[in-house]
Image (tube, rainbow, N blue to C red; front, top):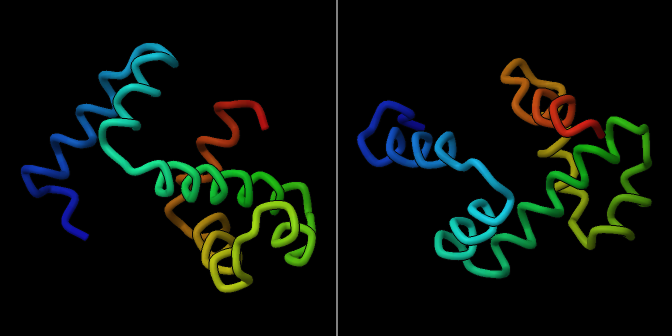
Length: 93
């Protein structure tokens, strides 16, 4: 992943420019399909459930995600990047 590419820098700047929930809703709806929004919401929900020590089977039942996707979220959650953990801490879950 090249975070320094022009288009990726622009995406990050756009996300940082969002000030309200309404702006976020409008931008995400324009940027992604409904299925993509739903998928990303489920991945975040999975990360929250993993921090609460829910089992993979409970998470799969609640979200409908595969065990492979849950494992990938767990890898990122516990990895050195810390993106999920930082956001979960910021939103208070």
